Length: 257
Image (cartoon, rainbow, N blue to C red; front, side, top):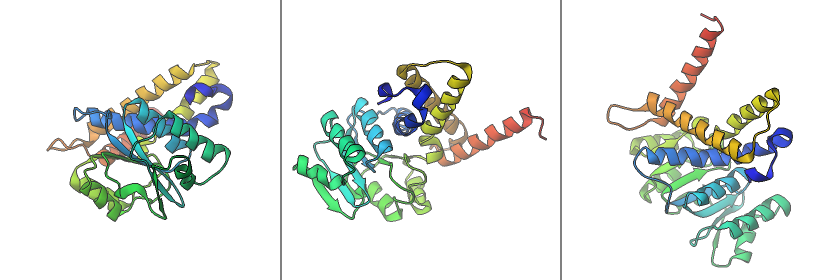
């Protein structure tokens, strides 16, 4: 949790948390843009490392129901959803005992384990791929759409293949690319440098508040540059243009013509 870590001296540990938190913040902003929210939404998450763990934590704070986690061996499906007790078990299992996610069903027998599979066939409202590059492929994207998924946000670096992204954009669902949706870790690194250079000491609550504000601004920029004539927000386009404009403005500010 952010409250357990001092950003000044151990700031490098806060980045996975900020990435997981930031991905959920970005998802919530996408939903709010449609007059919706994360509350009571069914969420599938891949991975079970730090980013995935903190994505679960923040999703629970928003009132969502998270039903999957995974590792390289397979995924678990808990139809009852995770709570703080179950999340604490996963954190201990993966961070301390270095166990496999399949051991979750030994502790919670009502859950199911699927060997060698990914969680993208599970019916959900929101999907957050937080594991590895290219983990969510075109066929997975089609399965998500068929099962009613309305939003996908990348918590890992490039977890969705180009084919999957094409499926999401054709279906016009909310899709947050990693360069925007998982920017929280990089953002907090910037906060850490600012804090250290100015000799400030921010509380965990202040850091989280700043992270939330940064993710809101990133979302607004994506909307500004990515809104199409029909009202659909192409977050990939918006993030690309926003990034280009930021670099161009910085170059001009430095006198580069």
